[in-house]
Amino acid sequence: MELSSELIIKLSLAILIGGIIGFERELRSKSAGFRTIILICLGATLFTIFSKFIGFPNSPDRIASNVVVGIGFLGAGVIFRSNNRVNGITTAASIWLSAALGVGIGCGYYEASIVGCVLVVAVLFLFSFFDRALDKVNQMREYKITYPYEENQQHKYEDCIKQFGLTIHSRSQSKTGNIITGAWLVRGSEAKHHDFIDHILRDVSVTGFDF
Image (cartoon, rainbow, N blue to C red):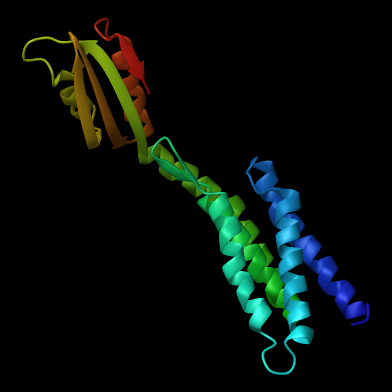
């Protein structure tokens, strides 16, 4: 396989497209950033190019098809759970799409790969504004409140959550000595969460509050 102008174009385009998508991830300080996405796109392109020669003439698509399988391991590595939320799914999807664009470049579908890159960046940049707007009206939080036990008052903070228009998705309570510890997973708008937090912070009977 000679170093032809077509090969140089493919490798250069893979670096460019991977760099554009990686730059957006780097700006947001994600685990898979600028260099990682470039290497993924470049690797997918090379695997696709090599598969045409290694698999010729019977199954030239065998190596390229396994890029989809292999990229799943990288994607799974950036997904983690924190504070009752699953993080890293968008970055994993970016890795998956970068590999897909790399395969497209390796097959010679330059225009489709460029258009795909534009669409990926548009979704990552523009739709983030909609995502933040949605988070303001529909936000999930976990609250843990510690307070002294009072007769017939063990559910007062759960009632307080409901009074502020928040929806409880799960709850747990425990008692140690004379101290009650309650934990609630709550959904509601950002403004309602702020009002509830401000109310609890002003409650002198609360001995501990995680929010």
